[in-house]
Image (cartoon, rainbow, N blue to C red; front, top):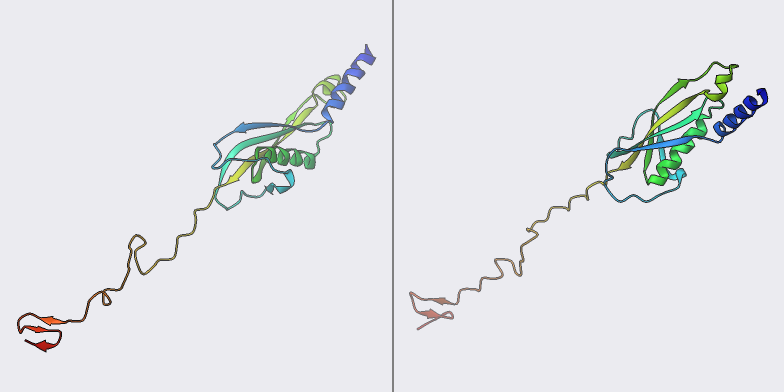
Length: 168
């Protein structure tokens, strides 16, 4: 029976060392269609979220057992999921730990506890196009000639019956 417990513990230990599991919880609809991207192209923030206008699209949680917590591997797992979702950036917002059994106890092999790393999948909001430079003329007006060019020189004075500069 003791060898069965050791075998069971070895199975749990091996499964715990495989890597992080990442859970995704959708928060908001993306402001544009998202396309999967490489994890290396996802910007990673940890001290504060980016100041650029953005939308939080999903909450991510990477879990790993206490048998061998590997924080860099957890960050990579979060960045990979953010890339799969098409997010522009990842903001790592916190951690938590769940204690398990007491080390050395048989139950520790069954439940060593876990660490979690939380992140927010961020999508940048498209910035509005810059306003066009103001023009001297209204954009919806069609001007063929300037007002001075449209006035012909006086050629007739009706009261004195003068036509084309000659008296008649």
